[in-house]
Image (cartoon, rainbow, N blue to C red; front, side, top):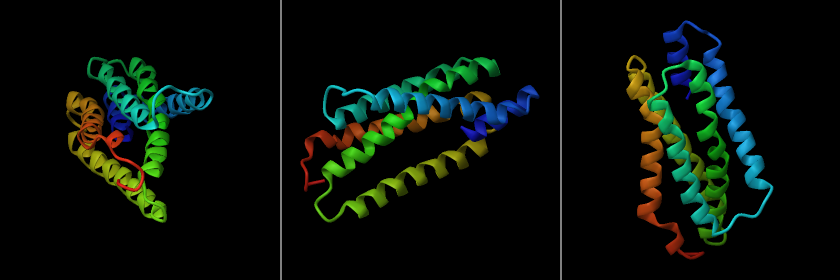
Length: 163
């Protein structure tokens, strides 16, 4: 997101975009977290994790067609709305699948995997900064990878203590 924001800022000669795009993404995340937290949702947390990950992926797709920096600013709020939900569900699912006494280790692996994904995505985004379409596709590609892993692992088939 940050590399995309800086690249779009440079491409359009509007320095404010480098902060505006991440702010819109964060605002969407804040609002999505509020909506998610205010009610009880159907299905297991694992199913909610898979659904919210799919929605997160779909939320990135409009960036492939949008060239206007202001439309992109509005558009990034949509995947942002699902980011907090994905992270919240990931923590609850991790907790449910972790054997007693191993929660700290499981959370450490979750945080590590998120950090490694962000670092790899940012490094790749830096390499793609001069290629607008590829750069815009990168968040969707990362979300596709994460959703694929979730679907292959199928955490809903695991039971507590057998993660």
